Amino acid sequence: MRFLTAGESHGPELTAIIEGIPSQLPLTEDQINIHLKRRQKGYGRGRRMQIESDTVRITSGVRHGKTTGAPITLHVENKDWKHWDKIMGTAPLSEEEEGEVKRKITRPRPGHADLTGAIKYDHRDMRNVLERSSARETTVRVAVGAVAQVLLEAFDIHLVGHVLEIGAVKSSISNYTSIKELKGITEASEVRCLDPDASEAMKKAIDEAKENGDSIGGIVEVVAENLPVGLGSHVHYDRKLDGKIAQAVMSINAFKGVEIGIGFEAARRLGSQVHDEILHSEETGFFRRTNRLGGFEGGMTNGMPVVVRGAMKPIPTLYKPLQSVDIESKEVFSASIERSDSCAVPAAAVVCEAAVAWELAKAMLEKFGADSLNDILKNVAEYKEKVRTF
Image (cartoon, rainbow, N blue to C red; front, side, top):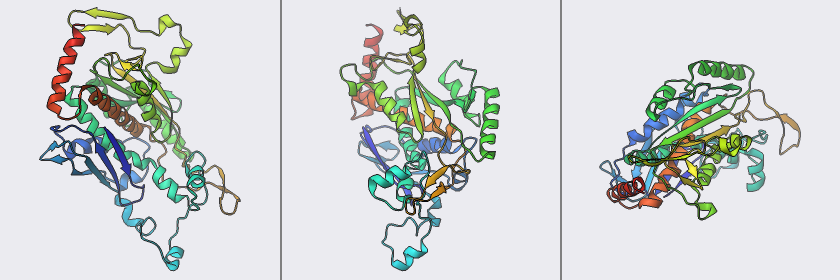
């Protein structure tokens, strides 16, 4: 199972092609649009979210509400394109038109891909870089992740992304009875946080950063439950599922750190305070007393909930720009300002959820087959019974 995305922030649309989704999976545009709408919510979002109302069009791979096994094509229109058709058009420009087209970017923003991408791809107008490196691309990554979540739900696997920290404000509540409860509470929060007191403090921190022309980052967590034992493998480095998930999370715009389970805290504790004791019951088979390792041992799922955290840096586009250097004149300038959010951490939780969902769904198909959903469900049921009686 694999996918490709294409499109620019102010281009006509964003596109994804997914290959490897099994046949007979019930799938509708509405199931994807739910997650696209979730991505657009969140305290601290900018004006772009007032312009766009993201919805998906499925143009291949689904017939009469079910997947066929063929590649699935997803399209999300950029409604702001109508103001950018000349600037971002694909047709060559005449000399006269080149003079009329403005918004050429020659002043790179610190912390963004602008300068490095321009050097690598030999662009004198850095709009060619920032249009693709924009977090707008995560729109179709969420759409792809939504398809993965529909597949996971067919196996009764559920997951949710939520916010643990924004700036210096941390959630002090970590107890919940189920994924359903966690999702219900955090989806009702403007900052997607379980702790109502921390939620209000997070909003104040976002407001303060915005008033100062600054941006603010945070930490998100994704939890997935009811995964079978043995997804991934210990036999080679590139087959370890926790490694694949870490790569997927790190590939999200502005993410600079990943933890599985207690993550870096494990380095500060003794082994007796880290490893999860193994227990057994007739009803469920083997299980762990705790889940400090976040559902993984040896690169494989161990049957406990998968817990993944990602650290998002503050967005590099600031309304009080940092110092930069013009690539043409080499003069010192304040970095260019592009319309942006002051905080996108609540939305990033949805993006992270999508990235984790994709890797989990891919691992399920690698282990249990990938052609027909009906055959895969039989394989999963047989394997789970083997695990229970092992």
